[in-house]
Image 1 (spheres, one colour):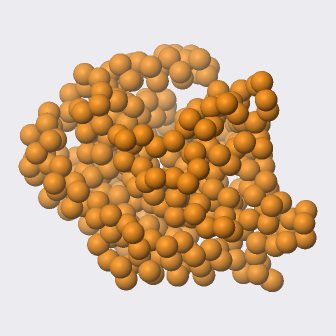
Image 2 (cartoon, rainbow, N blue to C red):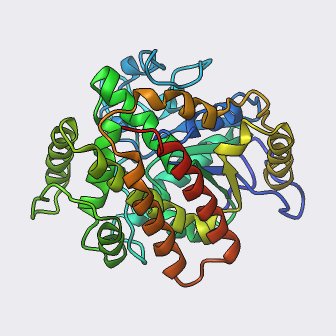
Image 3 (cartoon, rainbow, N blue to C red):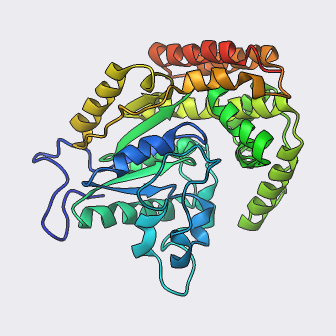
Length: 364
């Protein structure tokens, strides 16, 4: 893939190819990734594509774009333009769906080798990047459905800066659980069940499900897109009444898989638990973005998400937080048992587990 030039003769890399030619943000649901992406998107030199694997893109129309904005309950930052504004050139009047997108892209995968869908996925993402580059801008794509495929994407897009966004599992889960409790939105509780269930034929996924003690809804035997959609509905229904401890175990299992994939395949890690607590750390991230990609996002307005989780503890009902120490321990043990994981990365996961123990202590 070559994205170093554009049709206008401009270039988004320094001579000699020193800079990465775009940015892929690999995040999880409720991780704070949308805020990170918004800081990149705010730059005049960047074209920011939001959730390029979201199933919303299969039905998106030009008429829909303007209505896709943050709601009061989303917790997302105010945006200068609708979420999917950058997709307008890839939509046609009177039709639905972003050019090149397939609904099959919307489910993350965890196989060691790319699946049969990957060439189409690679071509689609390359087309998004090329669209930005042709305008003389740096593409910045923010994903919630890419962590399992991160090694595939790293290999297929070596000239892209791959950035992992990591938040401790207690804070991340609490953000979605409270949306279910307060606003009857089960999506973020259902998502881990759906992703784990549709991937449980993979040995690694089976192992983490067993390690974390997760109970899953039964999965349809068919592997068609229609069956994936049906299972998504099954999981959403299941999540409405799911036992809180099991919902948390499912979330930690998926969080662990994402953390494992990030271990060897990100060029930069953004620690969302630190970014709002340390101006020095936020400034350092800005410098690393500039050094690797030539863009300079300002992270100085980051909120202290850890403190927000502490304040929300009295509202976290239906979960025995003290019992969750065991699943944090299981996640750490699972990471330690995997080959090729560095001691430094294991320590990062251990720190997240310790913080999660502290934050879940008062959940009832």
